[in-house]
Length: 227
Image 1 (cartoon, rainbow, N blue to C red):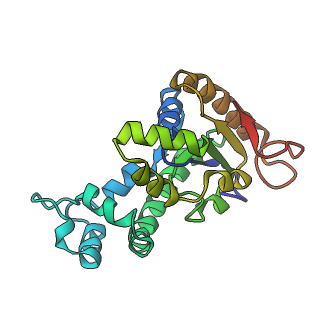
Image 2 (cartoon, rainbow, N blue to C red):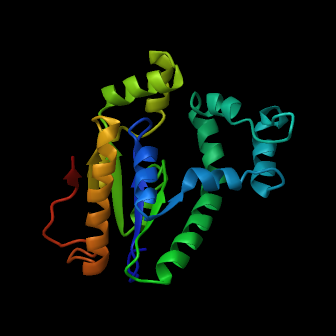
C-alpha cells in the first residue's frame, strides 16, 4: 500500500468492459492476479460466517436446495435495489478486502520487485483505490458496454442498462486511475494491451514511487492511456 516499499495495483473496469479478459491475460503472462470475485465466492461458501450473515439479512429463499448461495436470484434483487446492494456489500467487502491484502502482501513481501494486482470490480465504488500504489481502469464506452452485455448475457436493453447504471459511470472513474487501458476494440487486441500494461507496471516497480508519492515518474500525466 501507499507508503510501503511494495507495489500493489488495483485493477478495475465496468461491466462488460473486458476487465476479466484482461485479468486472465495478465495471469497468463505470469503476473500475480488476485481475483476479488473468486475470494467473494470463498467468503460466502457453505458453512462460512459470511453465508450465515447473508441468510440473516436476505432470507433462506436465496439458498439453493444444496444450501449454497443462489447468486442469480440474489443478483436480480441487488441490481434493482440500491439498499439491498449496500447491505450485501457491507457483508462481503470487508471479508474480501482482508483476504486480498493478506495474499498480496505475502506475495510482494517475498520480493520487493514484484507486482501484485488486485482485480476488484468495485474498486472505486468501495474506496479501495485510495490505498493502492497505482490503479488501472479497463475502459470501454457505454455504447460498447451495452452491446457486449446484451449479446453476452441475453439481456434486453433495459436490463443491460440497469446493470450498467448500478455501477459508477465508467467515464467518472477515468479521473481516479493512473492507467487507462482502452479495451473498446476486438478481443484479439487484449493480449497486446496486457503486455504493454505489464511492462508499464513492472517498470514502475523497479523505479519506485515518483515525486507525487505514487509509482511511476512524477512528470507523467495521469491517466496514462494504453490503446
